[in-house]
Length: 344
Length: 275
Image (tube, rainbow over all chains, first blue to last red; front, side, top):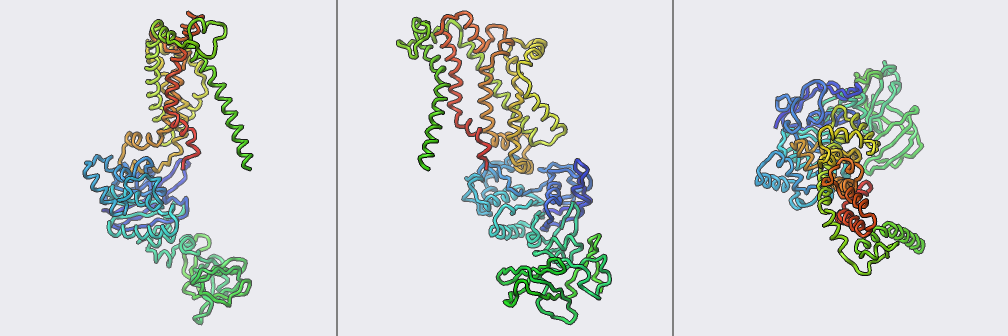
Protein backbone atom coordinates (compact mmCIF):
# COMPACT_ATOMS: atom_id res chain seq x y z
CA UNK A 1 0.00 0.00 0.00
CA UNK A 2 1.22 3.43 -0.72
CA UNK A 3 0.39 7.06 -0.98
CA UNK A 4 -0.56 8.82 -4.18
CA UNK A 5 0.61 12.26 -5.09
CA UNK A 6 -0.16 14.45 -8.09
CA UNK A 7 1.99 17.50 -8.56
CA UNK A 8 0.89 20.24 -10.96
CA UNK A 9 -0.51 17.82 -13.49
CA UNK A 10 -1.67 19.26 -16.80
CA UNK A 11 -3.15 17.46 -19.76
CA UNK A 12 -3.64 19.32 -23.02
CA UNK A 13 -5.24 17.45 -25.90
CA UNK A 14 -4.95 17.85 -29.66
CA UNK A 15 -6.97 21.00 -30.22
CA UNK A 16 -5.12 22.85 -27.45
CA UNK A 17 -7.92 22.19 -24.99
CA UNK A 18 -6.75 21.82 -21.39
CA UNK A 19 -8.52 18.82 -19.94
CA UNK A 20 -6.62 18.81 -16.66
CA UNK A 21 -5.47 22.11 -15.27
CA UNK A 22 -2.84 22.17 -12.51
CA UNK A 23 -4.15 19.14 -10.61
CA UNK A 24 -2.29 19.07 -7.33
CA UNK A 25 -3.31 16.82 -4.45
CA UNK A 26 -2.19 13.81 -2.52
CA UNK A 27 -3.89 10.85 -0.89
CA UNK A 28 -2.12 9.41 2.10
CA UNK A 29 -1.61 5.71 2.59
CA UNK A 30 -4.95 3.92 3.00
CA UNK A 31 -7.09 6.92 2.31
CA UNK A 32 -10.31 6.84 0.26
CA UNK A 33 -10.57 9.94 -1.88
CA UNK A 34 -13.60 10.57 -3.99
CA UNK A 35 -13.43 12.75 -7.08
CA UNK A 36 -16.70 14.33 -8.12
CA UNK A 37 -17.77 16.69 -10.87
CA UNK A 38 -20.25 17.04 -13.72
CA UNK A 39 -19.69 14.93 -16.84
CA UNK A 40 -16.88 16.25 -18.98
CA UNK A 41 -15.07 17.85 -16.05
CA UNK A 42 -12.00 15.68 -16.57
CA UNK A 43 -12.47 13.21 -13.73
CA UNK A 44 -12.17 10.13 -15.91
CA UNK A 45 -9.13 11.60 -17.65
CA UNK A 46 -7.62 12.22 -14.24
CA UNK A 47 -8.14 8.60 -13.26
CA UNK A 48 -6.81 7.30 -16.57
CA UNK A 49 -3.76 9.50 -16.20
CA UNK A 50 -3.04 8.04 -12.77
CA UNK A 51 -3.50 4.56 -14.25
CA UNK A 52 -1.12 5.33 -17.09
CA UNK A 53 -3.72 4.79 -19.81
CA UNK A 54 -3.29 8.43 -20.79
CA UNK A 55 -0.18 10.55 -20.73
CA UNK A 56 0.01 13.80 -18.85
CA UNK A 57 1.35 16.86 -20.67
CA UNK A 58 3.28 18.15 -17.68
CA UNK A 59 3.50 17.58 -13.96
CA UNK A 60 4.40 14.48 -11.96
CA UNK A 61 2.55 11.53 -10.52
CA UNK A 62 4.03 9.68 -7.54
CA UNK A 63 2.92 6.35 -6.16
CA UNK A 64 4.53 5.36 -2.89
CA UNK A 65 7.01 8.17 -3.40
CA UNK A 66 8.17 6.91 -6.80
CA UNK A 67 7.60 8.95 -9.92
CA UNK A 68 5.55 6.79 -12.27
CA UNK A 69 5.07 9.10 -15.27
CA UNK A 70 7.18 6.92 -17.53
CA UNK A 71 5.87 3.57 -16.33
CA UNK A 72 3.41 1.44 -18.30
CA UNK A 73 0.01 0.81 -16.64
CA UNK A 74 0.94 -2.73 -15.63
CA UNK A 75 4.15 -1.50 -13.98
CA UNK A 76 2.38 1.03 -11.78
CA UNK A 77 0.88 -1.46 -9.30
CA UNK A 78 -2.49 0.06 -9.79
CA UNK A 79 -5.84 -1.58 -10.31
CA UNK A 80 -8.83 -0.02 -11.97
CA UNK A 81 -12.50 -0.88 -11.96
CA UNK A 82 -14.28 0.43 -15.04
CA UNK A 83 -17.71 1.94 -15.39
CA UNK A 84 -19.14 -0.87 -17.52
CA UNK A 85 -17.14 -3.55 -15.64
CA UNK A 86 -15.11 -4.32 -18.80
CA UNK A 87 -15.15 -8.05 -18.14
CA UNK A 88 -13.78 -10.28 -20.89
CA UNK A 89 -17.02 -11.57 -22.44
CA UNK A 90 -15.61 -14.86 -23.72
CA UNK A 91 -14.07 -15.89 -20.39
CA UNK A 92 -15.71 -17.38 -17.32
CA UNK A 93 -15.60 -15.58 -13.98
CA UNK A 94 -12.64 -17.78 -13.03
CA UNK A 95 -10.77 -16.95 -16.23
CA UNK A 96 -11.56 -13.26 -15.83
CA UNK A 97 -10.12 -13.29 -12.32
CA UNK A 98 -7.10 -15.36 -13.31
CA UNK A 99 -6.22 -13.44 -16.48
CA UNK A 100 -3.94 -10.88 -14.83
CA UNK A 101 -2.08 -13.49 -12.79
CA UNK A 102 -1.64 -15.67 -15.88
CA UNK A 103 -0.35 -12.68 -17.83
CA UNK A 104 2.27 -12.22 -15.13
CA UNK A 105 3.16 -15.91 -15.39
CA UNK A 106 2.19 -16.80 -11.84
CA UNK A 107 2.31 -20.55 -11.19
CA UNK A 108 -0.98 -22.34 -11.91
CA UNK A 109 -1.42 -23.65 -8.35
CA UNK A 110 -0.87 -20.17 -6.91
CA UNK A 111 -3.35 -18.68 -9.38
CA UNK A 112 -5.92 -21.29 -8.40
CA UNK A 113 -5.50 -20.64 -4.67
CA UNK A 114 -5.61 -16.87 -4.95
CA UNK A 115 -8.59 -16.81 -7.30
CA UNK A 116 -10.53 -19.11 -4.95
CA UNK A 117 -9.66 -17.00 -1.91
CA UNK A 118 -10.79 -13.80 -3.61
CA UNK A 119 -13.94 -15.46 -4.94
CA UNK A 120 -14.88 -16.61 -1.44
CA UNK A 121 -14.27 -13.15 -0.04
CA UNK A 122 -16.60 -11.60 -2.64
CA UNK A 123 -19.20 -14.36 -2.58
CA UNK A 124 -18.41 -15.47 -6.12
CA UNK A 125 -17.34 -19.06 -5.45
CA UNK A 126 -20.55 -20.53 -6.87
CA UNK A 127 -20.26 -18.45 -10.04
CA UNK A 128 -16.71 -19.23 -11.13
CA UNK A 129 -17.86 -21.28 -14.12
CA UNK A 130 -20.30 -18.69 -15.44
CA UNK A 131 -19.82 -16.24 -18.26
CA UNK A 132 -20.33 -12.48 -17.74
CA UNK A 133 -23.55 -12.53 -19.77
CA UNK A 134 -24.99 -14.96 -17.21
CA UNK A 135 -24.31 -12.64 -14.26
CA UNK A 136 -26.45 -9.96 -12.64
CA UNK A 137 -25.19 -6.40 -12.42
CA UNK A 138 -24.00 -6.83 -8.85
CA UNK A 139 -22.21 -10.09 -9.66
CA UNK A 140 -20.45 -8.47 -12.63
CA UNK A 141 -19.42 -5.65 -10.34
CA UNK A 142 -18.01 -8.07 -7.78
CA UNK A 143 -16.12 -9.91 -10.50
CA UNK A 144 -14.62 -6.64 -11.72
CA UNK A 145 -13.67 -5.79 -8.13
CA UNK A 146 -12.13 -9.21 -7.63
CA UNK A 147 -10.11 -8.92 -10.80
CA UNK A 148 -8.78 -5.58 -9.57
CA UNK A 149 -8.00 -6.97 -6.09
CA UNK A 150 -5.98 -9.81 -7.58
CA UNK A 151 -3.65 -7.27 -9.15
CA UNK A 152 -2.32 -6.66 -5.64
CA UNK A 153 -2.49 -2.95 -6.21
CA UNK A 154 -0.94 -0.19 -4.17
CA UNK A 155 -3.58 2.20 -5.39
CA UNK A 156 -7.10 1.21 -6.31
CA UNK A 157 -8.90 3.32 -8.92
CA UNK A 158 -12.67 3.14 -9.39
CA UNK A 159 -14.34 4.87 -12.33
CA UNK A 160 -18.06 5.26 -11.58
CA UNK A 161 -18.24 1.58 -10.70
CA UNK A 162 -21.80 1.74 -9.41
CA UNK A 163 -23.43 3.89 -12.07
CA UNK A 164 -24.75 0.92 -14.04
CA UNK A 165 -26.50 -0.62 -11.03
CA UNK A 166 -30.02 0.09 -9.83
CA UNK A 167 -30.54 2.15 -6.70
CA UNK A 168 -30.99 -0.49 -3.94
CA UNK A 169 -28.07 -2.51 -5.27
CA UNK A 170 -25.98 0.63 -5.49
CA UNK A 171 -26.28 1.41 -1.79
CA UNK A 172 -25.58 -2.23 -0.94
CA UNK A 173 -22.46 -2.23 -3.11
CA UNK A 174 -21.46 1.11 -1.59
CA UNK A 175 -21.48 -0.46 1.86
CA UNK A 176 -19.53 -3.44 0.56
CA UNK A 177 -16.97 -1.14 -0.99
CA UNK A 178 -16.51 0.72 2.28
CA UNK A 179 -16.09 -2.54 4.17
CA UNK A 180 -13.63 -3.71 1.55
CA UNK A 181 -11.65 -0.52 1.81
CA UNK A 182 -11.51 -0.87 5.56
CA UNK A 183 -10.37 -4.49 5.47
CA UNK A 184 -7.86 -4.08 2.64
CA UNK A 185 -6.66 -0.74 3.93
CA UNK A 186 -5.54 0.42 0.52
CA UNK A 187 -5.42 3.82 -1.05
CA UNK A 188 -8.47 4.32 -3.20
CA UNK A 189 -9.54 6.96 -5.66
CA UNK A 190 -13.23 6.84 -6.39
CA UNK A 191 -14.60 8.82 -9.31
CA UNK A 192 -18.29 9.62 -9.55
CA UNK A 193 -20.66 12.26 -10.91
CA UNK A 194 -23.02 11.65 -8.01
CA UNK A 195 -22.26 14.13 -5.25
CA UNK A 196 -24.11 12.17 -2.56
CA UNK A 197 -22.04 9.08 -3.38
CA UNK A 198 -18.87 11.16 -3.23
CA UNK A 199 -19.78 12.58 0.17
CA UNK A 200 -20.85 9.26 1.67
CA UNK A 201 -17.82 7.29 0.49
CA UNK A 202 -14.90 9.68 0.52
CA UNK A 203 -12.81 10.45 3.55
CA UNK A 204 -11.90 13.48 1.53
CA UNK A 205 -13.61 14.79 -1.57
CA UNK A 206 -12.06 16.45 -4.61
CA UNK A 207 -14.56 18.61 -6.48
CA UNK A 208 -13.57 19.03 -10.11
CA UNK A 209 -14.99 21.37 -12.74
CA UNK A 210 -13.66 22.17 -16.21
CA UNK A 211 -10.43 20.34 -15.42
CA UNK A 212 -9.69 22.39 -12.34
CA UNK A 213 -9.86 21.41 -8.69
CA UNK A 214 -12.52 23.56 -7.03
CA UNK A 215 -12.02 22.30 -3.50
CA UNK A 216 -10.46 19.40 -1.62
CA UNK A 217 -11.83 18.77 1.83
CA UNK A 218 -13.69 16.41 4.12
CA UNK A 219 -17.33 15.78 3.15
CA UNK A 220 -18.49 17.93 6.08
CA UNK A 221 -16.39 20.90 4.98
CA UNK A 222 -17.35 20.52 1.31
CA UNK A 223 -21.00 20.64 2.30
CA UNK A 224 -20.83 23.13 5.14
CA UNK A 225 -18.07 25.37 3.96
CA UNK A 226 -17.95 25.48 0.16
CA UNK A 227 -15.19 27.72 -1.15
CA UNK A 228 -17.01 28.90 -4.25
CA UNK A 229 -20.39 29.06 -5.91
CA UNK A 230 -19.72 25.99 -8.06
CA UNK A 231 -19.07 23.74 -5.08
CA UNK A 232 -22.02 25.21 -3.19
CA UNK A 233 -24.35 24.61 -6.14
CA UNK A 234 -23.00 21.18 -7.09
CA UNK A 235 -22.90 19.59 -3.64
CA UNK A 236 -26.14 18.98 -1.76
CA UNK A 237 -29.56 17.88 -2.99
CA UNK A 238 -31.83 19.65 -3.65
CA UNK A 239 -29.25 22.22 -4.70
CA UNK A 240 -28.60 25.43 -2.83
CA UNK A 241 -30.93 28.39 -3.47
CA UNK A 242 -29.33 31.54 -4.77
CA UNK A 243 -30.79 34.95 -4.00
CA UNK A 244 -30.15 38.53 -4.86
CA UNK A 245 -28.78 40.84 -2.19
CA UNK A 246 -32.01 42.77 -1.70
CA UNK A 247 -33.52 40.00 0.41
CA UNK A 248 -31.32 41.26 3.19
CA UNK A 249 -32.84 44.70 2.79
CA UNK A 250 -31.04 47.27 4.88
CA UNK A 251 -28.62 44.66 6.18
CA UNK A 252 -26.84 44.18 2.88
CA UNK A 253 -24.13 46.59 1.94
CA UNK A 254 -22.83 45.12 -1.29
CA UNK A 255 -25.85 43.86 -3.18
CA UNK A 256 -24.35 44.67 -6.56
CA UNK A 257 -21.45 42.27 -6.45
CA UNK A 258 -22.64 39.57 -4.11
CA UNK A 259 -24.97 36.65 -4.57
CA UNK A 260 -26.37 34.87 -1.52
CA UNK A 261 -26.99 31.20 -1.04
CA UNK A 262 -29.12 29.24 1.41
CA UNK A 263 -29.57 25.48 1.56
CA UNK A 264 -33.15 24.17 1.18
CA UNK A 265 -32.91 22.29 4.49
CA UNK A 266 -32.04 25.55 6.33
CA UNK A 267 -35.26 27.30 5.40
CA UNK A 268 -37.89 27.20 8.19
CA UNK A 269 -41.62 27.78 8.45
CA UNK A 270 -41.32 29.73 11.73
CA UNK A 271 -39.09 32.43 13.06
CA UNK A 272 -36.73 31.08 15.73
CA UNK A 273 -34.46 33.98 16.62
CA UNK A 274 -35.11 37.68 16.76
CA UNK A 275 -32.64 38.47 14.01
CA UNK A 276 -33.83 35.73 11.65
CA UNK A 277 -34.44 36.89 8.09
CA UNK A 278 -37.21 35.84 5.75
CA UNK A 279 -38.28 35.60 2.15
CA UNK A 280 -41.82 35.23 0.95
CA UNK A 281 -43.44 33.99 -2.20
CA UNK A 282 -46.25 32.03 -3.76
CA UNK A 283 -46.20 28.25 -3.30
CA UNK A 284 -45.70 26.75 -6.73
CA UNK A 285 -45.52 23.11 -5.78
CA UNK A 286 -45.66 20.87 -2.73
CA UNK A 287 -43.98 17.52 -2.95
CA UNK A 288 -44.46 15.05 -0.14
CA UNK A 289 -41.43 12.84 0.41
CA UNK A 290 -42.88 11.11 3.45
CA UNK A 291 -41.21 12.45 6.54
CA UNK A 292 -40.27 15.67 4.82
CA UNK A 293 -41.94 17.98 2.35
CA UNK A 294 -40.24 19.75 -0.47
CA UNK A 295 -41.80 23.10 -1.25
CA UNK A 296 -41.09 25.31 -4.21
CA UNK A 297 -41.95 28.99 -3.95
CA UNK A 298 -41.68 31.74 -6.52
CA UNK A 299 -39.87 34.72 -5.09
CA UNK A 300 -39.11 37.75 -7.22
CA UNK A 301 -39.54 35.65 -10.34
CA UNK A 302 -36.99 33.10 -9.13
CA UNK A 303 -37.55 29.66 -7.62
CA UNK A 304 -36.69 28.72 -4.04
CA UNK A 305 -36.78 25.20 -2.72
CA UNK A 306 -37.32 24.45 0.96
CA UNK A 307 -37.31 21.20 2.88
CA UNK A 308 -39.66 21.43 5.80
CA UNK A 309 -41.54 19.10 8.14
CA UNK A 310 -45.00 18.13 6.82
CA UNK A 311 -47.59 20.82 7.52
CA UNK A 312 -51.24 20.29 6.58
CA UNK A 313 -51.86 24.03 6.57
CA UNK A 314 -49.72 24.54 3.46
CA UNK A 315 -51.71 25.04 0.26
CA UNK A 316 -50.59 25.45 -3.29
CA UNK A 317 -50.72 29.04 -4.62
CA UNK A 318 -50.86 30.42 -1.07
CA UNK A 319 -48.36 33.02 0.12
CA UNK A 320 -45.64 31.63 2.33
CA UNK A 321 -42.92 33.25 4.38
CA UNK A 322 -39.78 31.23 4.92
CA UNK A 323 -37.33 32.06 7.69
CA UNK A 324 -33.65 31.42 8.03
CA UNK A 325 -30.82 32.13 10.40
CA UNK A 326 -28.27 34.63 9.15
CA UNK A 327 -25.42 32.28 9.98
CA UNK A 328 -26.77 29.82 7.41
CA UNK A 329 -26.32 32.35 4.64
CA UNK A 330 -23.45 31.99 2.17
CA UNK A 331 -22.19 34.84 0.03
CA UNK A 332 -20.33 34.63 -3.27
CA UNK A 333 -18.66 37.18 -5.48
CA UNK A 334 -21.00 37.62 -8.43
CA UNK A 335 -18.24 37.70 -11.05
CA UNK A 336 -15.57 35.33 -9.71
CA UNK A 337 -17.88 33.00 -7.79
CA UNK A 338 -15.50 32.88 -4.83
CA UNK A 339 -16.89 32.80 -1.33
CA UNK A 340 -16.93 36.09 0.57
CA UNK A 341 -17.78 36.85 4.16
CA UNK A 342 -21.42 37.73 4.70
CA UNK A 343 -21.58 41.50 5.09
CA UNK A 344 -24.29 42.94 7.27
CA UNK B 1 -54.97 -11.45 -38.63
CA UNK B 2 -53.79 -15.04 -38.44
CA UNK B 3 -54.70 -15.70 -42.03
CA UNK B 4 -52.82 -12.60 -43.11
CA UNK B 5 -49.68 -13.77 -41.34
CA UNK B 6 -50.00 -17.20 -42.94
CA UNK B 7 -50.46 -15.69 -46.40
CA UNK B 8 -47.39 -13.52 -46.01
CA UNK B 9 -45.39 -16.47 -44.77
CA UNK B 10 -46.61 -18.75 -47.57
CA UNK B 11 -45.71 -16.26 -50.30
CA UNK B 12 -42.34 -15.69 -48.65
CA UNK B 13 -41.55 -19.41 -48.66
CA UNK B 14 -42.84 -19.74 -52.21
CA UNK B 15 -40.57 -17.01 -53.53
CA UNK B 16 -37.58 -18.32 -51.57
CA UNK B 17 -38.19 -21.81 -52.93
CA UNK B 18 -38.39 -20.49 -56.49
CA UNK B 19 -35.16 -18.59 -55.99
CA UNK B 20 -33.47 -21.68 -54.57
CA UNK B 21 -34.58 -23.81 -57.51
CA UNK B 22 -33.40 -21.22 -60.03
CA UNK B 23 -30.01 -21.05 -58.32
CA UNK B 24 -29.56 -24.75 -57.72
CA UNK B 25 -30.94 -26.15 -60.96
CA UNK B 26 -27.91 -25.47 -63.22
CA UNK B 27 -25.62 -26.70 -60.48
CA UNK B 28 -27.53 -29.95 -60.07
CA UNK B 29 -27.75 -30.46 -63.81
CA UNK B 30 -23.98 -30.06 -64.21
CA UNK B 31 -23.43 -32.52 -61.38
CA UNK B 32 -25.88 -34.90 -63.00
CA UNK B 33 -24.16 -34.65 -66.41
CA UNK B 34 -20.87 -35.55 -64.74
CA UNK B 35 -22.28 -39.02 -64.11
CA UNK B 36 -23.65 -39.64 -67.62
CA UNK B 37 -22.26 -41.92 -70.31
CA UNK B 38 -21.10 -40.45 -73.62
CA UNK B 39 -24.20 -40.99 -75.80
CA UNK B 40 -26.39 -39.29 -73.23
CA UNK B 41 -24.23 -36.27 -72.50
CA UNK B 42 -23.40 -35.40 -76.08
CA UNK B 43 -26.98 -35.69 -77.31
CA UNK B 44 -27.87 -32.05 -78.04
CA UNK B 45 -29.56 -31.21 -74.77
CA UNK B 46 -28.52 -33.73 -72.14
CA UNK B 47 -31.34 -35.25 -70.07
CA UNK B 48 -31.85 -34.17 -66.44
CA UNK B 49 -30.93 -37.50 -64.95
CA UNK B 50 -28.35 -40.15 -66.02
CA UNK B 51 -30.03 -43.38 -67.08
CA UNK B 52 -26.91 -45.46 -66.36
CA UNK B 53 -24.81 -43.53 -63.86
CA UNK B 54 -21.06 -43.92 -64.22
CA UNK B 55 -17.92 -42.65 -62.53
CA UNK B 56 -15.99 -42.77 -65.80
CA UNK B 57 -15.92 -39.02 -66.35
CA UNK B 58 -14.61 -38.34 -62.84
CA UNK B 59 -12.01 -41.07 -63.10
CA UNK B 60 -10.99 -39.87 -66.55
CA UNK B 61 -10.57 -36.25 -65.63
CA UNK B 62 -8.66 -37.03 -62.47
CA UNK B 63 -6.33 -39.50 -64.18
CA UNK B 64 -5.97 -38.10 -67.68
CA UNK B 65 -5.91 -34.42 -66.84
CA UNK B 66 -4.00 -34.56 -63.53
CA UNK B 67 -6.91 -32.84 -61.85
CA UNK B 68 -5.61 -33.96 -58.46
CA UNK B 69 -2.47 -31.94 -59.07
CA UNK B 70 -4.36 -28.74 -59.85
CA UNK B 71 -6.65 -29.42 -56.96
CA UNK B 72 -3.61 -29.49 -54.69
CA UNK B 73 -2.30 -26.23 -56.18
CA UNK B 74 -5.64 -24.57 -55.54
CA UNK B 75 -5.79 -25.96 -52.02
CA UNK B 76 -2.29 -24.72 -51.11
CA UNK B 77 -2.97 -21.26 -52.49
CA UNK B 78 -6.44 -20.95 -50.97
CA UNK B 79 -5.39 -22.14 -47.51
CA UNK B 80 -2.26 -19.99 -47.40
CA UNK B 81 -4.18 -16.97 -48.66
CA UNK B 82 -6.95 -17.50 -46.12
CA UNK B 83 -4.63 -17.90 -43.15
CA UNK B 84 -2.37 -15.01 -44.08
CA UNK B 85 -5.11 -12.64 -45.16
CA UNK B 86 -7.28 -13.28 -42.09
CA UNK B 87 -4.30 -12.78 -39.79
CA UNK B 88 -3.23 -9.54 -41.50
CA UNK B 89 -6.78 -8.19 -41.66
CA UNK B 90 -7.31 -9.05 -37.98
CA UNK B 91 -4.16 -7.24 -36.89
CA UNK B 92 -4.64 -4.26 -39.20
CA UNK B 93 -8.35 -3.85 -38.50
CA UNK B 94 -7.75 -4.02 -34.75
CA UNK B 95 -4.89 -1.53 -34.90
CA UNK B 96 -6.81 0.92 -37.08
CA UNK B 97 -9.86 0.73 -34.83
CA UNK B 98 -8.41 0.60 -31.31
CA UNK B 99 -4.71 1.46 -31.15
CA UNK B 100 -3.71 5.10 -30.95
CA UNK B 101 -0.85 6.02 -33.26
CA UNK B 102 0.19 8.82 -35.53
CA UNK B 103 -1.13 8.57 -39.07
CA UNK B 104 -3.97 6.24 -38.18
CA UNK B 105 -6.55 8.33 -39.99
CA UNK B 106 -4.51 8.68 -43.14
CA UNK B 107 -3.89 4.94 -43.29
CA UNK B 108 -7.59 4.24 -42.72
CA UNK B 109 -8.47 6.45 -45.68
CA UNK B 110 -5.83 4.88 -47.89
CA UNK B 111 -7.18 1.40 -47.07
CA UNK B 112 -10.71 2.56 -47.77
CA UNK B 113 -9.71 3.97 -51.15
CA UNK B 114 -7.88 0.76 -51.97
CA UNK B 115 -11.26 -0.99 -51.81
CA UNK B 116 -12.32 1.02 -54.85
CA UNK B 117 -9.49 -0.16 -57.10
CA UNK B 118 -10.70 -2.97 -59.39
CA UNK B 119 -8.45 -6.01 -59.28
CA UNK B 120 -8.17 -6.03 -63.09
CA UNK B 121 -6.40 -2.68 -62.93
CA UNK B 122 -3.73 -4.24 -60.75
CA UNK B 123 -2.89 -7.14 -63.06
CA UNK B 124 -0.29 -5.35 -65.16
CA UNK B 125 1.67 -3.64 -62.37
CA UNK B 126 1.48 -6.82 -60.30
CA UNK B 127 2.86 -8.87 -63.17
CA UNK B 128 5.76 -6.44 -63.67
CA UNK B 129 6.45 -6.48 -59.95
CA UNK B 130 6.47 -10.24 -59.57
CA UNK B 131 8.54 -10.74 -62.71
CA UNK B 132 11.09 -8.34 -61.30
CA UNK B 133 11.48 -10.45 -58.14
CA UNK B 134 11.25 -13.74 -60.12
CA UNK B 135 8.12 -14.97 -58.37
CA UNK B 136 6.02 -15.63 -61.47
CA UNK B 137 5.12 -19.34 -61.47
CA UNK B 138 5.48 -19.46 -57.69
CA UNK B 139 2.69 -19.95 -55.19
CA UNK B 140 3.80 -16.65 -53.67
CA UNK B 141 2.59 -14.82 -56.78
CA UNK B 142 -0.97 -15.82 -55.91
CA UNK B 143 -0.70 -15.67 -52.11
CA UNK B 144 1.14 -12.40 -51.47
CA UNK B 145 -1.11 -10.00 -53.39
CA UNK B 146 -4.12 -11.39 -51.54
CA UNK B 147 -2.48 -11.22 -48.10
CA UNK B 148 -3.62 -7.69 -47.34
CA UNK B 149 -7.20 -7.45 -48.47
CA UNK B 150 -8.57 -3.91 -47.97
CA UNK B 151 -12.17 -5.11 -47.85
CA UNK B 152 -11.39 -7.50 -44.99
CA UNK B 153 -9.44 -4.80 -43.15
CA UNK B 154 -12.31 -2.31 -43.45
CA UNK B 155 -14.82 -4.91 -42.26
CA UNK B 156 -12.71 -5.91 -39.25
CA UNK B 157 -12.09 -2.28 -38.42
CA UNK B 158 -15.82 -1.55 -38.38
CA UNK B 159 -16.46 -4.61 -36.23
CA UNK B 160 -13.67 -3.74 -33.78
CA UNK B 161 -15.07 -0.25 -33.25
CA UNK B 162 -18.05 -1.85 -31.57
CA UNK B 163 -15.88 -3.49 -28.92
CA UNK B 164 -15.54 -1.28 -25.81
CA UNK B 165 -12.05 0.17 -25.49
CA UNK B 166 -12.33 -0.33 -21.73
CA UNK B 167 -11.94 -4.09 -22.17
CA UNK B 168 -8.62 -3.50 -23.88
CA UNK B 169 -7.63 -1.01 -21.17
CA UNK B 170 -8.49 -3.66 -18.59
CA UNK B 171 -6.21 -6.14 -20.38
CA UNK B 172 -3.39 -3.59 -20.37
CA UNK B 173 -3.89 -2.96 -16.66
CA UNK B 174 -3.90 -6.71 -16.13
CA UNK B 175 -0.40 -6.72 -17.51
CA UNK B 176 -1.11 -8.35 -20.85
CA UNK B 177 1.27 -7.25 -23.59
CA UNK B 178 0.13 -6.30 -27.08
CA UNK B 179 0.32 -9.86 -28.45
CA UNK B 180 -1.37 -11.45 -25.48
CA UNK B 181 -4.11 -8.83 -25.61
CA UNK B 182 -4.55 -9.52 -29.30
CA UNK B 183 -4.66 -13.30 -29.10
CA UNK B 184 -6.43 -13.82 -25.74
CA UNK B 185 -8.87 -10.92 -25.78
CA UNK B 186 -9.28 -9.41 -29.25
CA UNK B 187 -9.30 -12.56 -31.40
CA UNK B 188 -11.92 -14.43 -29.32
CA UNK B 189 -14.15 -11.36 -29.38
CA UNK B 190 -14.00 -11.05 -33.15
CA UNK B 191 -13.99 -14.79 -33.85
CA UNK B 192 -17.36 -14.86 -35.68
CA UNK B 193 -16.25 -12.05 -37.97
CA UNK B 194 -12.87 -13.67 -38.60
CA UNK B 195 -14.53 -16.99 -39.39
CA UNK B 196 -16.90 -15.41 -41.90
CA UNK B 197 -14.04 -13.54 -43.53
CA UNK B 198 -11.97 -16.71 -43.71
CA UNK B 199 -14.77 -18.53 -45.55
CA UNK B 200 -15.23 -15.64 -47.98
CA UNK B 201 -11.49 -15.32 -48.58
CA UNK B 202 -11.18 -19.03 -49.25
CA UNK B 203 -14.02 -18.96 -51.76
CA UNK B 204 -12.69 -15.89 -53.57
CA UNK B 205 -9.20 -17.36 -53.71
CA UNK B 206 -10.46 -20.76 -54.89
CA UNK B 207 -12.55 -19.25 -57.68
CA UNK B 208 -10.04 -16.59 -58.76
CA UNK B 209 -9.30 -16.88 -62.45
CA UNK B 210 -7.72 -13.90 -64.14
CA UNK B 211 -4.63 -13.30 -62.03
CA UNK B 212 -3.79 -17.02 -61.58
CA UNK B 213 -4.07 -17.47 -65.34
CA UNK B 214 -1.54 -14.70 -65.94
CA UNK B 215 0.82 -15.36 -63.03
CA UNK B 216 0.99 -19.13 -63.43
CA UNK B 217 2.26 -19.68 -66.93
CA UNK B 218 3.79 -23.07 -66.26
CA UNK B 219 1.04 -25.67 -66.68
CA UNK B 220 2.07 -27.58 -63.58
CA UNK B 221 1.52 -24.51 -61.40
CA UNK B 222 -2.02 -23.78 -62.59
CA UNK B 223 -4.95 -23.69 -60.24
CA UNK B 224 -8.14 -25.66 -60.75
CA UNK B 225 -10.27 -23.01 -62.52
CA UNK B 226 -7.45 -22.16 -64.93
CA UNK B 227 -6.74 -25.81 -65.64
CA UNK B 228 -10.44 -26.44 -66.16
CA UNK B 229 -10.58 -23.64 -68.73
CA UNK B 230 -7.76 -25.19 -70.72
CA UNK B 231 -9.47 -28.57 -70.62
CA UNK B 232 -12.47 -26.82 -72.12
CA UNK B 233 -10.35 -25.69 -75.05
CA UNK B 234 -8.93 -29.15 -75.68
CA UNK B 235 -12.08 -31.24 -75.28
CA UNK B 236 -14.86 -28.84 -76.14
CA UNK B 237 -17.11 -31.69 -77.17
CA UNK B 238 -16.74 -33.82 -74.09
CA UNK B 239 -19.37 -32.17 -71.96
CA UNK B 240 -19.25 -35.01 -69.44
CA UNK B 241 -15.59 -34.42 -68.77
CA UNK B 242 -16.17 -30.70 -68.31
CA UNK B 243 -19.08 -31.32 -65.97
CA UNK B 244 -16.97 -33.70 -63.93
CA UNK B 245 -14.26 -31.03 -63.62
CA UNK B 246 -16.78 -28.43 -62.54
CA UNK B 247 -18.25 -30.80 -59.99
CA UNK B 248 -14.85 -31.55 -58.48
CA UNK B 249 -14.15 -27.81 -58.33
CA UNK B 250 -17.39 -26.93 -56.60
CA UNK B 251 -17.21 -29.73 -54.05
CA UNK B 252 -14.86 -28.13 -51.49
CA UNK B 253 -16.89 -24.90 -51.58
CA UNK B 254 -20.04 -26.84 -50.80
CA UNK B 255 -18.35 -28.63 -47.94
CA UNK B 256 -17.04 -25.39 -46.43
CA UNK B 257 -20.34 -23.60 -46.67
CA UNK B 258 -22.27 -26.42 -45.13
CA UNK B 259 -19.75 -26.79 -42.31
CA UNK B 260 -19.49 -23.09 -41.51
CA UNK B 261 -23.04 -22.08 -42.26
CA UNK B 262 -24.03 -21.48 -38.69
CA UNK B 263 -20.97 -19.37 -37.90
CA UNK B 264 -21.30 -17.54 -41.15
CA UNK B 265 -24.91 -16.58 -40.63
CA UNK B 266 -24.27 -15.56 -37.05
CA UNK B 267 -21.72 -12.95 -38.05
CA UNK B 268 -23.88 -11.63 -40.87
CA UNK B 269 -26.56 -10.75 -38.34
CA UNK B 270 -24.05 -9.93 -35.58
CA UNK B 271 -24.72 -6.20 -35.74
CA UNK B 272 -28.32 -6.61 -34.73
CA UNK B 273 -27.73 -9.16 -32.01
CA UNK B 274 -24.96 -7.68 -29.86
CA UNK B 275 -26.19 -6.80 -26.40
